[in-house]
Image (cartoon, rainbow, N blue to C red):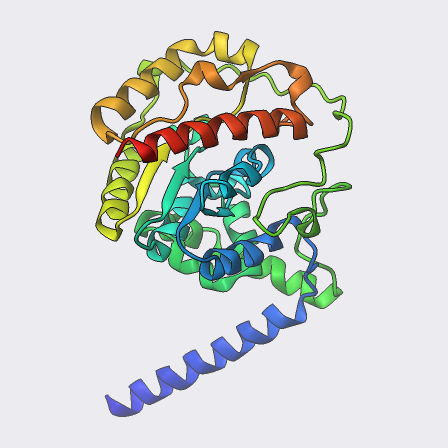
Length: 309
């Protein structure tokens, strides 16, 4: 038995060495958009307390201007990167790092209330920052593991041909486009990209399952309270036409949040309806002036909420 265990450990060690060599042999782009996760986690650890931590996908990265929050005596940390990471992963990034006095503003893309993560996005982040595996929930780890062999096979092919596994992103969508707070800033002064927005109607609210997201937010709120932090809900910027078209879905989510999560809201859905001219591209990404106005309003409401505690 001892001999078998010894041989098994040696075999596992050999596989680990091969995996490490493959990982290092594949040339990853250090300025790739998803590599910004490294800087965001460094900021999360290094920012002085008390902090205001923004949680969400790229809509948070693009559509939050952290500067008005500094006036509240809070050090901003913008964790927004990609909605494909899923709500569970985003909350898992922040939960272990909470400190007394912190403020957390959770503003996920609306579809994350009923959808999960996307394997490619999670693997892209793990590729840049392997330590982020700790941010996966049990269910998330199983979902990502299902694609593990596919990812490793791609690593082998890319290492053999000395090409990056990272998917190239156009123009300004780079790691270097984020500022020291974690805000995406390269688009702020640029004209809007003339792209047709994606129009994909959502199912009726009774066909959607919000239970997992609601439970995760309720648990996260309890984690914040236990750490001495305060947590608030905000909403994802939305085109007015979509906000009108999907009013029933927004109303259903808002009702569940008020009844079962009990986290204060700094915005209601109608606050985040913007005209097409306010968006930079086809995503939920506000341009600089719209992001600044929205963030100033959020900061004022946060100041009122903190003063009223």
